[in-house]
Structure formats: structure tokens, C-alpha cells
Length: 449
Image (cartoon, rainbow, N blue to C red; front, side):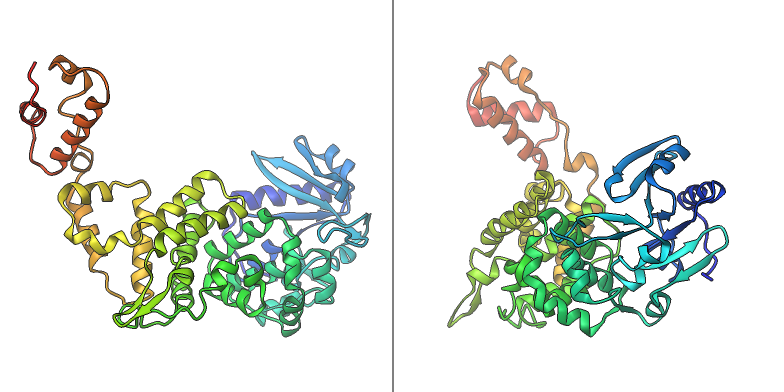
């Protein structure tokens, strides 16, 4: 039996699907991650359902369905605008493409479990009474905190090479150990991960970066040779030594691991994904820019080089333009924090009002905590934000283009130059009224209407 949990709306709807299938004479269970999470005492928002009902029977039983994977026995049932995957018990033929079986056969609940990936995901639960069916010792492996494949690791991975990375992801997110046989199999088969689409690999990496255990995940990727296959740019950070004064933690790889260790377990929001990739790639340019002379170790141009490398990485993984630009801007600005306490008022205000400044500030905080530990620039920015209201950061214009034309200026480039100069003066708090603005324009451009 599983521990009592607070029931959420999605679970109630998923239970309703199971009850309706059972009332219609079919077997039906929750399967996979939601059952694992219940055993661990965690709530879940993803509910996969398996049943003896055939796809056409499922379609007839529910008013809103989508045939998302009918050829593999999967129907999506829509309840209260939320999709639930309902799959018919099946067994698979050989996997000819490293992802999809060449043919599926409808089967029993037990046979369905034996085609799945890991024992911790191989549990069935009847949500109507809480009873669990365990054909693969998954409950014991959850208690022992270990990731094992159902059957031979080589066989499971050859069916879908992404399972190598999924094993690492589950170990990271759950803080479980990986069975030694699995680790050895991943090491031997690591190059095959390149046969998986960039999007599928990206999605697993996003889960490692946002669901907790990021450091564990990347250490396991390094140990199993997966890292150098999918992210050689990050793998090259090993052994890139840094000045001990600023980086007592060691080389760039160790610094990156320290930052990954500090990433919050907050889920796959757009911002969390961008922060995770910002952490992972912020110093990626150091491997190619390190130099050393009598004055010490230098990384001249590592920010610019890092931007170029990160752009290639993110395009390779098919990130959206918006996500790519956010991460590149995080890299571009991460060294600017060292100058914030010397900035003029206009410069610091423009810096603080950057889009996604909360991400920039958090990246800087993690950067400091993962190295020298000094947060004086972080605290300075926080203090400035407390003291500056929205109007101070974005002062309303004292004059607009029409005002300038009324003063005798012709439409064109000069109007934009004047407006930019006026904003600078406002941010510096040297002008505060429309009259101040007019006097400034007349004095600087020496033109009078």
C-alpha cells in the first residue's frame, strides 16, 4: 500500500478514467512515474494509464479522445481540458530504429510491464483501492534508491538509446544510485546517443537542469562518457585551471558543478530552463581562451567566445530563438557585475532594468557562491532595486518628437539622438522638468526655434 496523499484534481480525473474502464469490464491501472512518486510520498501531476481495452474501445467509452499513437495502442483522453494517455497492454517486436518497435502486439498487464525501461517505473497501481502490482521488484528498488533496467541493460538501451540518458536523469532527479551493470552498459554504448534527435536529448537535459540533482546528473554523464558525446564543449572544461584567488574551488569544470549543485528544484518553466543553461554555459569560452604569463592566468575574450559556443550548442539542440537570446544575454552580461559599484547612475539604472534581470542576478549569485563566496555586488544591486522605483528606472519623457519639431528640429536621426541624450540626463538626475529639458537641448544643439 502507498502512503496517504492529498488528492489533487488531476488525480481525481485520472481515477475517473480508470473507474470508467473497469466499470466497462476492462482492467485498468496507473503506471510508471506517478506510482513511483506515490510510494516516495510525493504528489504527481502526470498520470499514465494502461488498460486491457483496445484503442477503438477506449475511443467509444470517452467523449473526447485523440488518436495520438493508435498504431502503438495509445489514445489520449481529454478530461477537463487535460490530456491523459491511456495505453492498451502490449508487447513489442524488435526496435529497428533505436526508438520505435517494428510492430506491437496487445497482451497482458504483466507482459506490458516487461517491455518498459526501469524497475522503478514498472509498477502498476489500482487507484480505486491503492493496491500495487509489482512484477519486477520495483518497490524494493525504490526503497533501496537504485535505478535498474527491466531485463538486460543492453537490450533496453538498444530498444531506445535515449534510455541511457533517462537512467542518468532519474538517478539525478531522485538522488538514486545507478546499478553498476547499467553504468557499464552506458559507457560502452554512449556514442549511440547521437542517433537520438536533438529535441529528445534536449528535453532530458532540461529535466536534469530543472528538476533537482543537476550536479549528480552531469557527474554521471561525465563518468559514463555521455557528456563528451552530446556536450563536448562542456566536457572540455575539465582541467582548465583558474586563479585560486578568485576560484579556490578549482578548475572551470568544478566551478560549473558547484553552480549546478546550487540550482533550485523548481520545474521546467521557461525561466528555469534558461537559468540552467546559463549556469552550464556561462564559462564555456574559458577552455579556448586560457592564457598564462608572469602576471597570472587570464581568460581574455572568454565571454565573447562563450557566446559563440553557446549559440552553436543551443541551435544544435533546437532551442527557440527567445530561449537562445535569453541565455546568450546571460553569458554576455555575467562579467558586468564586477563593475556595478563603479557605474554612473544612468549606467546602473539601465543595467538594473534589463529584461530578465532577476535571472542575471540569480546567475551572478550562484557564480559567486560557487567560487569566492563574496556577494557584495549582488547585495549592492538588491539595495539599488529596493531604493529605485519604476519611474526612477523608466522615467517618463519630458519632451517627445513632436515637442522637438515644434522647437524647430527637422524629423530624422537628430530627433532620436536628442531623445536618447535627454533620457541619459534624466537617469543621471540632472534634468527633472520639461523646462530643464528644453534648456538642455538648446544649449547642447545650439539651435533655437
